[in-house]
Length: 130
Image 1 (spheres, rainbow, N blue to C red):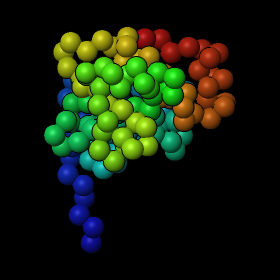
Image 2 (cartoon, rainbow, N blue to C red):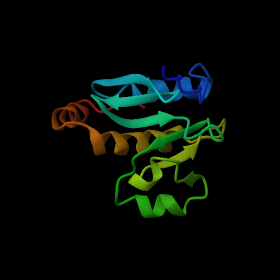
Image 3 (cartoon, rainbow, N blue to C red):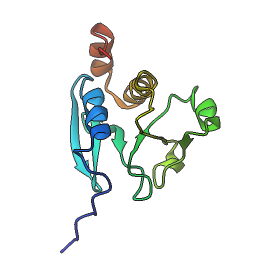
Image 4 (cartoon, rainbow, N blue to C red):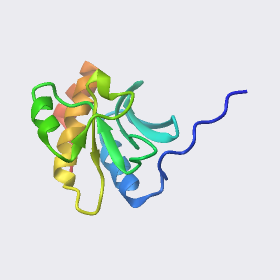
């Protein structure tokens, strides 16, 4: 029998709740628990999740716009998360001083990287309220 993955981050933590509210505003977005953390998906594809690692649980992992990735990698708040980092994903810490408008832009770019054409059309037709 396979052991369940240990919980990386408390899904009820206020910062995770706020991330959830942000992510689930996107067309057809759903939350799925995977690897002990909440993941947010456009259909079956992940566009963001909480908990980069056991050592960095209060973080958001996202897939950056390729044009923005080099500048994001220069930001001291941003790091390459285990497992996902080699595929181009990045992570940023969540704390009481987080700029949620900036996080919303990162989530938007990440969603657009993985969403289906119809989902992006729906997003563009009725932009997410931040």
